[in-house]
Length: 74
Image 1 (cartoon, helix red, strand yellow):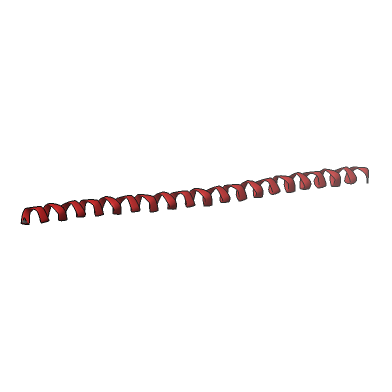
Image 2 (image 1 turned 90 degrees about the horizontal axis):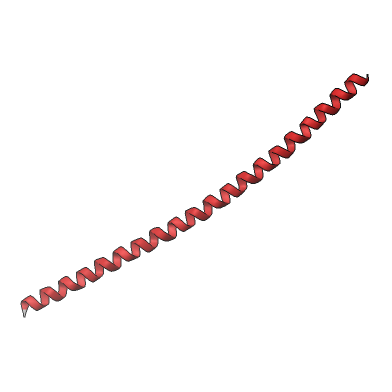
């Protein structure tokens, strides 16, 4: 009888360990998914900033070009 109780306890412990392992895996998976989403947001923000800088740079190049043209006509 004592052996049956120990086997039952061992089975419960194994089941509990498996459940804990599964829970940890799910937590890590959710954290990974959240990190992926945050990374995507940051990448999108970075791309947006790069685009703004490119536009601003092109505007500055045009302004310099216009200033040089005006300088030559003076």
